Image (cartoon, rainbow, N blue to C red; front, side):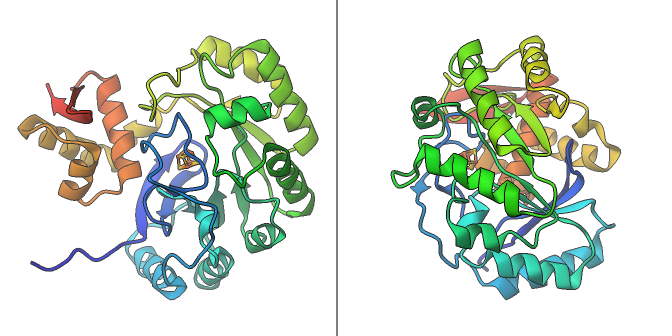
Length: 311
Ligand code: SF4
């Protein structure tokens, strides 16, 4: 049997923040400098801060070029996927390579853990938009929520974000993930607010565990409390955690139907759906969540594995 060729692009997928976003995934699955308790992709299997050329730059850029010939122009080309993109040592060349072949704005969705390294800040300087994360107001909660690789220090990480903001010419939107039961109380929120004032991003975007998290104890914060927190952060802050509306876009609903059809035939894990329908895991997670919300499927655990079944 012929081996399935590795692909680096997925979508365009609907994104509340970025419209139609063509995703680029060029760091292996769950190769990440964090192991966030809320990660929708499960626990990190390769925790590292070692940067290297995980895949050839030309292969990524050529695939983007070919993909753009086949789809209507997306609103953004987004460097994200299932591993931390700044771990690719040539992310800067990937950004410049894409900019050479397309006018579509390039966004980098990153955990923001490595911007205290000048080389990493320089590498992303050619992007049009950077969206890093900050999920804690203190070292203690940082270790609890993000479970970083040991060489990543909270203070250095925060300082890296501040210097990035100072030097980067384009917009910087900071995503703040609020974890129910851990960071959703006033004292911690005040600490996070102190840091966002210090970093001074153009926007602050609040998220919470609307998708199934890696650890069950990573709680979902209800929308009222999220709005309250957003008001506390001020006018540049918005809640982005409500994804329900995004998935009803006509172009994407047929794929949701395919997922449902498959799950009515047999129980599948996210990986099974991904392999069966040739969809990226990130896309599958969105469809599965939508179908769960609509109560069209149910989740059950078998030998520790999450399986989804159509009703
Ligand atoms: S949420 Fe992002 S940063 Fe956190 S473990 Fe998952 S992929 Fe890594």
